[in-house]
Length: 283
Image (cartoon, rainbow, N blue to C red; front, side, top):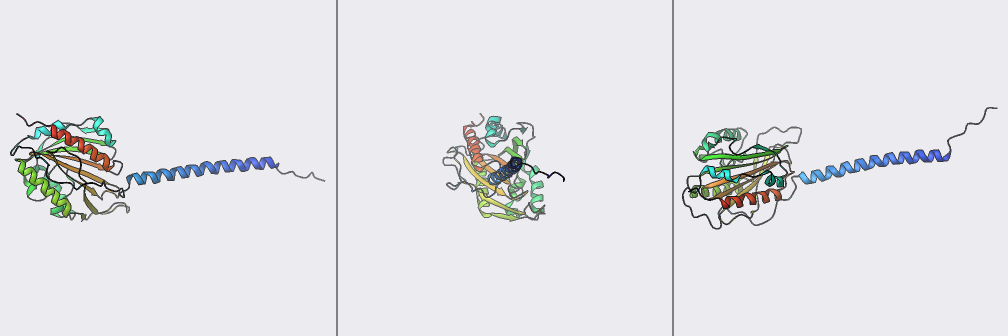
C-alpha cells in the first residue's frame, strides 16, 4: 500500500497567506500613494484654483509722479533687473537672457508679427491679448508707434517662464492713456474663441481674459493686471502686469502650467513695483 501523501502543514499555508497579504498591501499602498500624489498635483495645477480676491485694480496711481513729460528713458527699465533670489519666489531658477542680451526695438518693429498671427487665428483686433512680452497692443493704431521697448530679462525653468520688459512713452499722459486703454480692454474682452486645432482633447481654442485683483504698489505707481487661460492646455495661465510710473511702463509676465500660483506672482509684482517706485529720473 502506497504511503498517504501529506499536505503542507498549517503554518506553511499561514506563511504563504501572510506573504500574499504583504505583497497586496505594498501594491495597495503604492497605488494609493500614486493616486494621492496625482490628486494633489492636479489640485495644485488645476485651472479651478480661485483667483485672488481683493479691491478692483485702478489704472491711475493714487499720487502720480509730478513729471508731465519724459521722466525716464528706456535705459531706466534695466535698473529693474532681478536676481535669482528674487525669482526663487516663483520657483524659476535659470536666467535665459540677462540685461543687454536682447536688442531694444520699437513697437512698430515687432508688433505686426504678433498682430498678423492673432488675426489669422480669428482673434478680435480690439481684444489682442496674444500675450505680447512687452507693453504694447499688436493690433490697432498703437502697433505703429515708434516708442522704444526693451526686454530686461527672461527667466525659465522647464515650462515656467518669467520675463520683464519696458516701454518708454513720449509723455506721462501717453503712458496713462495706454493704461486706461488696457484696463478698458480687459473688461471688454472676457473671452476669445480662436481657430486653433485641439490636440488629443487637451488643448482648447477658448481664451479667457480675467482682470486680477489690485496689488499693493507705491502711491505713484499704477498697475493693471490680467490672466489669460486656455491654449496650449487647460491648466495654462499667463499672468501679466503692466506697471506705470511717469512715462515708463514696465511689464511683468509669468507663463505657467499652474505650478506658479497667483499669490506668488502678485507678491513678485509688488516687489518689482517697489523698485520702479524707487527709480530716479536721469539728470
